[in-house]
Amino acid sequence: MKKKSNPNRSSGVLLHITSLPGPYGIGEIGIESKRFVDNLVSMGQDYWQILPTNYPEQCNSPYDTNSAFAQNPFLISLDDLLEDELIKSSDLEPIPTFSKKRIDYNKVKNWKYPILKKAASNFQSKKDQKFSDYKDFCNKQKFWLNDYAVFMVIKEIQKKPDWSFWSKRLKEIKGENIKKVENQFKNEIECIKILQYFFDRQWKQLKRYANQRGIKLIGDIPIYVSFNSADVWMNKSLFKLDENCKMLFQSGVPPDHFANSGQLWGHPIYNWENHSKSGFNWWIERIKYLRQNVDFVRIDHFNGFAKYWEVPIGDKDASRGRWVIAKGMELLQKLYMSMEKVNLIAEDLGEASKDALVIREKYDIPGMSILQYMLNENENAWYNVEKTVLYTGTHDNDTILGWYDHIRKDLSKKELETVNRTLNIDPQEVNWSMIEYSLHSNAYLVIVPIQDILGLGSNARMNKPGTVSKKNWSWRMDPSELNSSKVRRMKNYTMESSRG
Image (cartoon, rainbow, N blue to C red):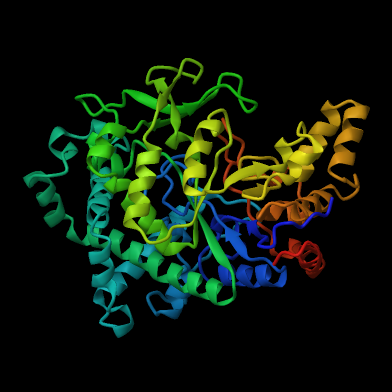
């Protein structure tokens, strides 16, 4: 089992920022993030993978955001704002009692946003030299920042999250009506921009700290954005909309093991012809922006660069969709011409993976494999993954323990014995057996969700695809769960497999 033919092998841990512990109800990009970097170093890891940090639009999903660029202000560290003297300790009082294991998003937002606004207001009155780069930040982000802030203000004025129902004069991004909004709500617009600056400033500190400690960050780009996003409002021609700005089609995937009728995601579909005519400028700016914040960019649903599942807007499930060819090959050609270096990882799982393989091979982009899905592979297939990022599971999978508990009920005794033998599983330590197995594979990079290191069950899974639930995206790590024994064991397995 323990083959090590690839000398450049490494490993990392998947944990989203929101799941970090801390006193303020949600993970933040301050001291707890840096503490987790220290944990990664102690575990002998090289990478920290996160989910998208953009501002969620609905259901708190980081894969459904109100901007492809704007970051989630609720991840801003309050402790860092205190240190910068932008707020006082009294501004936090009283701090609500927050769960250590689940995020109550409404509770967090209702308490934290007024504090963030106060920090932004105090910032406007400060003349501190350490914030002198604010204007430079706004200038560098002019591609999206001001229009996004205007969008968010109009959204609040109109009291309608669906911008296609806004008054006609505000649907159009250019013109006197938008100028009037900018003049009338100047302070509100500035507040939104300042919060984005706070995030950017704190994130740069986190990335610098991680890189100095030898930890590289893997970010995530959802292939789609929400219809109720500044991107669609600002770039209507880049999406398939009708004359009334309504969606003609919606995103999804065909029937699979997750859902018999497919998954209906409901995002607007790209007008790839118009993206091509624009030189793929929106896409290139999007990837450039994330690349500034991370060391590797994972593209979620990379298969959509080859072909995508287009579902009529009136359908209630994805079963009647159709495959449509995309222009991912052309996009990546433009991308690599415009950027010196960008490290991509392709989430290429699903029916269109063979189509995506053509693009991956041309640009030498590693794909993904998930250990839980590889039960039907033969023994040799496990080692034919040298250009693959191998996961024990992802945010869309059950935890190892939850998965094993499920298959133990579904498989016959003989089938279960085959699984145990193939994966070298000790039924008393399933999570560690599969972690060790993955680390000893030939995959150049292995990523393990923190839940699997902690040995948690189904209650700790991050998301269940095709469902809307308060449990989705709400899991938090209890700091007491990552004890020195687990840290030491992860490091030992990593070192024994010649990673790290």
